[in-house]
Amino acid sequence: MKDDNFLKENNARHLWHPMGHPGAAQAEGPRIVRSAEGVRITDIDGHSAVDAVGGLWCVNLGYSNDRVKEAIARQLSELPYYSAFAGTSNPAAIEASWAVREFFAADGMARVFFTSGGSDSVDTCLRLARQYHKLRGEPGRIKFLSLKKGYHGTHWGGASVNGNARFRTAYEPMLPGCFHLPSPYTYRNPFDETDPDRLAERIAAMAEDEIAFQDPSTIAAFIMEPIQGAGGVIVPPARFMGLMREICDRHGILMISDEVITGFGRTGDWSGARHWGVQPDMMSTAKGITSGYFPVGAALVNEKVAEVFETAEAAGAIYHGYTYSAHPVGAAAVIACLEETRRLDTKANAAARGAQLFEGARRLAETHDIVGNVRGGHGLMTGVEIVSDRAAKTPMDAATMQRIHQATYEAGAMVRLGGHNILMSPPLTITEGEVDTILAALDAGLSAA
Ligand code: PMP
Image 1 (cartoon, rainbow, N blue to C red):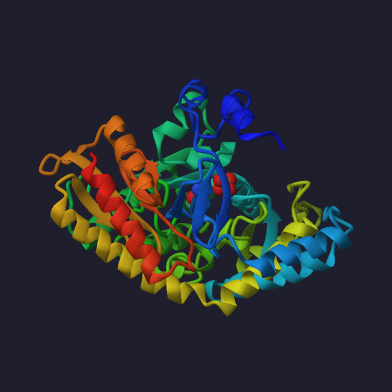
Image 2 (cartoon, rainbow, N blue to C red; image 1 turned 180 degrees about the vertical axis):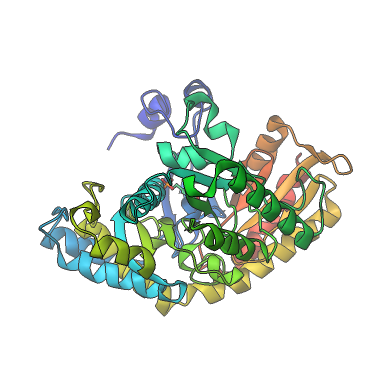
């Protein structure tokens, strides 16, 4: 291993970072995180902070789960890799598929298709949705409907249904036939509608209108996150997802719930859709499935979808998959991680500590005028929207956001910026005292604006 001087000198010289400007990274030098323990990370300069981001919304069990680490090490010794393409399988993958399905049986999920991460899972759902309609004799159903401010990863399908220009513009043209509805975002929406019920109804009415305009027989699926994560932790009105479920049913459109962040306990339940009393047809998952200890994702489908594939002739074959689909080491990580997730009942702690974080952030709004809106209330997902003028809701400038971020870090918590939003999604194992540490650090960060 090279020494620290080498690391600092070469920081970002050869490494291009995802979601960052390569030139800026070279000039500024990203923080180099060397180690982590519990919910804390320590950088190369020895500064330690509570990781209020949980890696990237993924380290649900914290950084020190020995059972998961040992399971990975054991599997590496026994079988480090074997393909799961048609004709072969491995014991860990079989058990992992059972374990994942158990988590989402209450959501109606019946089959599991393993991937290497969230973007893979989303694109798997989109591709299987088209194939499903072809198998049913409706090959014209090729279009996708989604929400503005939604984030569905960076593969071509996911980026095409993404609802933020930032992730699209440089890479256009996107997949044809993708249409977006307004985000169910009460703080900012095209109707200036602040009543959640009325906002849900307005967007549902727009959905009906758009579907009629497109022609329902051309639409394969509607995809949404039960709580929009990267878009700013936007919690939809309680009725919204249910209204969209009814619309999908009325028009033969599949509903995909993108649970990459919300699955496996983050929202205070095992799935996000469950909060809204909705059973989707498909789910995309990743992140909490292995707590980030190994890159794994999974796409799930319900019995209705499964049956169409399983009873079809040759056309039911799935010519889609990844070299690392059902990777045995990944599968061992899934099994151990999900056992730990249940044993520790992380969803209960997510609900309790999430309420503490949300209420604490709301209290900060009383003393900091630059807090425009605080969102959360469903587990450990909290978004704090920063504005330079509260009445006008003017988004805070990027330089000030960087200052807040830096000061929060120096005061003891790593948070994430999403434009002018501060996003927080700490490990689900976090304690009351550690949530207090985040809130105190954020208080200091906001004071530095
Ligand atoms: N969908 C959602 C809802 C996500 O939040 C993310 C990642 N943040 C993705 C898909 C893409 O996942 P990945 O980065 O693992 O490809």
